[in-house]
Length: 113
Image (cartoon, rainbow, N blue to C red):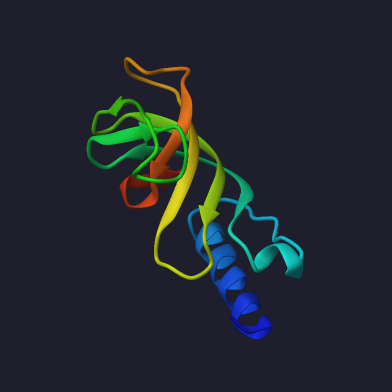
């Protein structure tokens, strides 16, 4: 991936985060070439039942299942810079898994203020 494409991808992720009401700290250019965690804070909830994972991969261990509407607070957006897949590191704030921290797939995260 060229430097310009990397810059564009990181900028697009930052715009997406800002549109959802979060803030993003973009990584230095060297770090942008690899997958990384973009620091931000966003409250949200799950849009459907989703597994809480130990890492940002469907092959990682499941820590529990978050039911639809479970409230979470995310402090990290992980994106590999080339695919459409985004993961959120979250702390669960409601339901039977309250207090647990793990990763959830971004398609099932709905952010709000």
